[in-house]
Image (cartoon, rainbow, N blue to C red; front, top):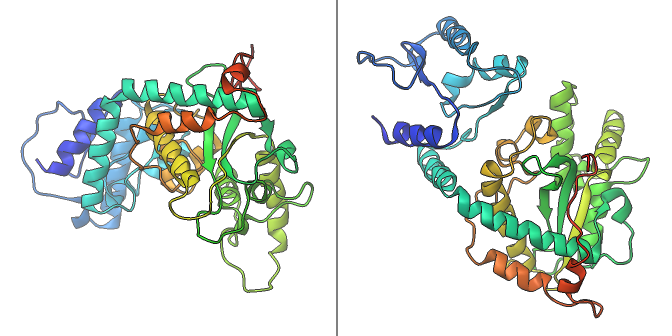
Length: 368
């Protein structure tokens, strides 16, 4: 057996409730099925034969997979091309985490992801410690809707922001899940600020926004198009200098603004100079790495989360509206460094005193 197959098997055994082996000769096989050796691949088949093979696999999966289930496909494009759209059309959530990866990248991803799975208790503890620190920030700075925080004078010029979705409970709890982490000014000499970046994400009330100036808006808008099966070919494409955005984009930008305006934001002030070694950059990528790895095991996204319809597999697989740093190794000292930042007194009020108020990241849509 190949190293790739062995690692894929280890991943499936550590994470899945049940799994199948895709076989060019036999379709979908139970893991303990004993077969005679064969020398055949889908690459040798014509289009009609591959389509017939895909129908055979779908029929085999009918009893095992129900609408609302999540299916992770680790096979190559030839093996999944006839399966993904059919399964999604039946209400199944399909994830292809290794799409576009070379063999070496696949091996590395499987090793990393399987190790993450086996270390779930450690990630659980670290994840809880991180959310406890966010609770302290909420007690001190408040938790505001994006639509309300833009324009507030108490938002620090520099820092890191965390978006929480009021409709995304953490592991079924009455607490919100972080769905995006961001910062600004990571290039030396950059003049951008945290309030300015939040305004870019929010857009203009009643007038939409500009997804070409906010990758967050880009991803959310693309997921909306996928979920509603609306065709808007210009979304995400560049414009010639001075050209106006297509008229048909305006209403969709408004939809994106309405969605984002309801997300909750908590910020942490970090007043360091712009540059690649910025502490803000470290906090951003470390938090993303922790939430992406721990989130798969501890706080997976709900079945209705809009990000499940995202065009980028990194978003679907991580449960975050982030693409960069989702595979970032979790620094063992991250929580301690983040705690040191959170513990800095501000305006004469100690964080420990503020935390005694009992604030927590409650989901607005959850019953109490």
